[in-house]
Image (cartoon, rainbow, N blue to C red; front, top):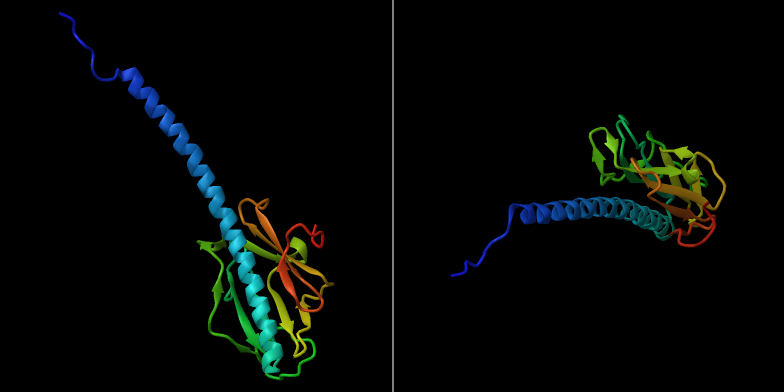
Length: 189
């Protein structure tokens, strides 16, 4: 009489568990990296959409207005930290509209950067990363932009992950007021 062997040995089970653990660790790192890229890309698209809307409203309503980006980054504490909003000038014909906290009408709806504690997980900077926020981008009734602090055009915004700055996207604001996410162009280094 022969006995047939059924089941797995302890060594075989441990090998399978080890392989599954290694694959899970690799997959979780890929998922985390993908989430960071998605978060940065989404913030770049949101910035483009908000700037396009501000420009269209300035021209369409005949009233100078813009978009304000508050201070953001690691351990930032301020009343407007990690948030952005649309502002409308009290004088509709303001030639170089920049945000004025005392006199401008501010939209109650705020765009909030994703945060963890007092730090944003996405960093929005101007001048291709050389200018930290706050940044004010205003549009006159002809749709022409003004950036404060003052800068040359095309103006490049750098949107990056706070922890891994190599994960980034560039948003380009041109002197005629048009805006786009940079693809393969060389406007922003």
